[in-house]
Length: 278
Image (cartoon, rainbow, N blue to C red; front, top):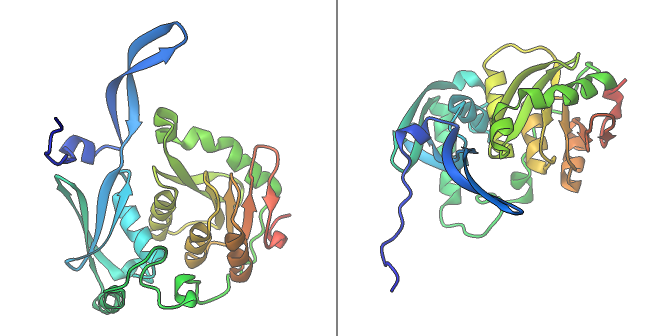
């Protein structure tokens, strides 16, 4: 006879504040079974709350959450500048984490208008969009940059990327996004179980400080959303270790983003705007 009680997942304070947790598992190999301690990446529901109203809930690794909140807000067009985010409070609940943000009143008014347009809409995909133009939201201006990058700078970053992936090295379950300067030095890295989240965290962190000219390297494929996020942030080049989609290529071409895919230790494929590579 089955138990009719509904399962409830709760997040202890320990899990909600840590990117990893440890547990004892059984490892099976040919002719051998043994118990050992394993380190796993955590993912927790994270609610984005603006001026008291919940807007979205994401599953994310519970670290660098203030960077995540700012990067998500900028990439989604909720904010146009980090200065429009006045305060962030991280509140831990039994079911996840609330990121309570205080934003500029004008931006909050625009967000409420957007929420009203989403009311009553159903379906899958890019919910709340009334047209294809709204669904494929692009930056207002074409990215124009005189900065060029050397081929060896890309290869240098790829060579050193593994050494900067702390969560991946211990769990094997996370993506990473890197800010790389023009000389190929990795200046900043953010990790998360979600590739979009890792990029949001990186862009949020970079928006808080003055940074040298550079490009973004990601350990994932290059989807439309990844290209859109770097384009909105004004980043001129995105390097992905996996493949881009056709839509990502067309968006990168239109926005002025140099898009590189299949980046490996000795080679990569340039899909758009190769003039930035020398």
